[in-house]
Amino acid sequence: MSLIETKGVQHRYARRDEEGNIIQTTMALQKITCEIRAGEFIAILGHNGSGKSTLAKHLNALLLPSEGAVLIDGMDTRDDENLWHIRQLAGMVFQNPDNQIIGQIVEEDVGFGPENLGVPTGEILSRVDEALAKVDMQSRRYSSPSKLSGGQKQRVSIAGVLAMKPKILILDEPTAMLDPAGRAEVLATAHELNRRDGITVLLITHDMDEAAGADRILVMDRGHLVMSGTPREIFARSEELTAIGLTIPTVTQIAEILRAHGITIVKTPLTRQELTEALTAYAFALHNN
Image (cartoon, rainbow, N blue to C red; front, side, top):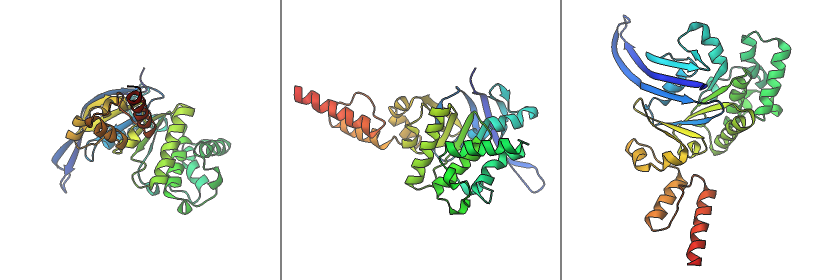
């Protein structure tokens, strides 16, 4: 069974007048059907307004579908009895860590979620220890969040979610407000949690280079799910991506330019190392001919 399953999900946002009457509706999601298996690292791509963040909020029941169904580990998000269990199972981290951090010190913030669940004090401390270790922030346990860098704050936000013992980590553009060093910290943390602990990661992003490291990519456009595949499969469709306002990773762009100039690159590269290997193989073949 899939860990996450959406079945024909549609979502309408309603705008109301001062009396509460609906005066306009906007369809944000249109018949989204997909499955995500436990342990996958999924990137959800799309430009602003594509519906990717709206979809993310359905995956831990912050939003409920207007039509269709979302199942998390077999539980329907529309069932009120499932609500808190789903939100423990599927933790969400937003793009601005300052909106998610509420504690005066790091330890306090990370323990906030388990404390609200009524977890015993000894267990809370154990969970805080474990969560901070997983994001490599033990040394800042007693620091004020205001003294942390953007990347460190985002790692504390992730630790706060991990303390809830989730199976799913949903990252909604978590690097959008960070500098390159902070982006690298957060992405490395997400990939390590996926590899080491088997946590299913959903990374919502518009950054192609971030998406290139995923197991699979879902591409959104105007509320529709328009593509699904491995990064290599998706980025090989550069013309289709361009048509919906997206690009491809820089390395892949370079490969396409080189191909246009007659240089043979068989496999679409996703990293600098892959491009280097492809060019080395081409030069070797050229030399031997």
